[in-house]
Length: 281
Image 1 (cartoon, helix red, strand yellow):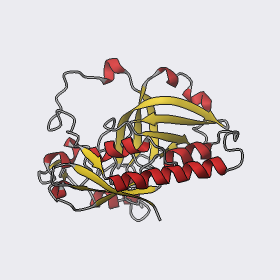
Image 2: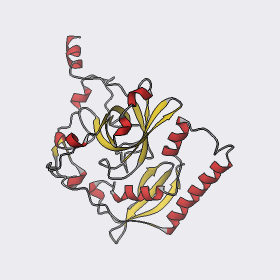
Image 3: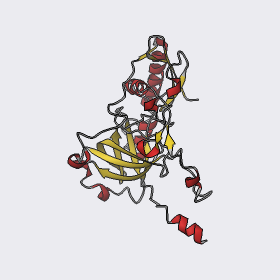
Image 4: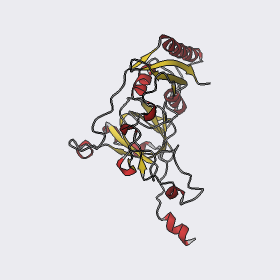
């Protein structure tokens, strides 16, 4: 019992104050760093942290820091309090270095961390108060749908921005690749958009229904819009494929975005090309 108590002293428990609601439900395709893609998403606050009083003054800041949890990598501590220590990875292989070179985990932003915590600075688009609850509309997040939110803090430019900082192996933003789309894939996309819009216009009182938390989240997670094709291209331009597959020609990969699966591949010209967009079955 004494050893277990001593082990627990090495851990800090933090409440989950909200959840990230986003178009990306899988890790594949998610930006590897924040602000690489202007992807709009929502932070849905949980009670009692969703009270408007807790956010007074935040709308005066353009950007915010988000502390969050790599929940799809999280080691379940219910099995063993020491299991996280047993699974510690002292080194990782960043995709930025080709996926072959090893560096220390603390010299990286790898998701395989002892704390399973991420840290991102994102743009605060606006604060919505819906049905008495707070939702933060943000853009530029590198989190997927369902990500637990641990903390929110304002970004302060005079102290948070270090102009002459050395950035190790990541001195500049990664180069975005060119992305094209086949005519058939674009037709598939537009057909799905038109079908969704038709269903919405046919629903009773679609334009007069009050905004609800569920409706706002549905729009973020599932509702397909014409503008989504530009977001899809921007996500694929980051090349989410594993580093060791970067030179594989005409090997299809699938990225799930909202309610569709987007298939793309590297073509002979060195471009990534979207070859199919189909509704998730």
